Amino acid sequence: MAIDILKARDDQEKTFFHTGIHPLAKMVCTGLVLFTTGLWLDPRYLAPVFLVGLIFAFIARAPKAWFLVMFTALLLTWYPTLRTTVAQADPSYYKVLDPQWAGTPVATINVPFLNLQTLGITYGTLYWLAGRLLRFASVVTWALLFMSTTPMSDIANTLYALRVPYQIVFVLQITYRFIPFMATVINQISDAQRLRGWHLRTWNPAKIIRRSIPIANPMIRRTAQIVDQVTIATQIRGFGAAKITPLRDLTLSKFDIALMILFGAGFLVALFSLIFFQAGMI
Image 1: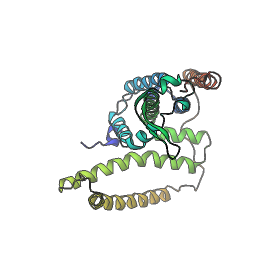
Image 2: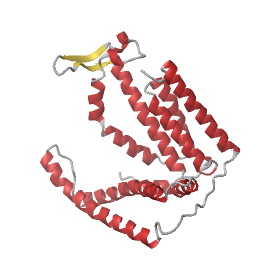
Image 3: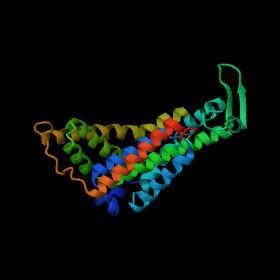
């Protein structure tokens, strides 16, 4: 079933997360959450962050199609994830977990050459894998919460009010719009080719390359057309010819200020706890 990401965004119901919080407050709070999750790898710390983000995303009516696309991308990275996981079998890698417990083997093998030593699955590697998956899930959930509740126009005008160079804002606008748009284009091209009897189901690398051509050719042509259209649109609008006036000011409500202070305090507590008590490490 094809997923139209842009349509999912257009059909989204507006909630308090869309209209009740200033874009600047959402940008700051989301950034602090992402920085905090980047500090941790312990599933016990990441699980609450993920669950809170998931609850907020549910309340904000974030498009389910976006989560499906992102978690599909996670499944596609199974090989590098598995390769990294089996390399964490050495109990000396863990600074907080009990080395004896972390080194308890589930399925391991000793590799005496190339200084690889023990590879495989242990309690420690499973714990590390759970933390990695929860970190990814937390980052994706909070990022999608922000993207689904904050239109690009609000983000751009907030950045303009912060005096961010318009060149940087323009690149962000194009990226913000280009990724979901290209996902929709890929769906449309794939559906059109399937109606003509096309499919990619094969284990033969040579056949995969040949069968990718019906998708690659129209994608290259469509991408070139989009680049040309964007170039013409920016020229018509006089991009860079004059100073851009922001349409939104930086006036924050008391709730916005309290929200940023709360998230900022949480980030500082997490940072100091990590430095002095190794909280969030494994």
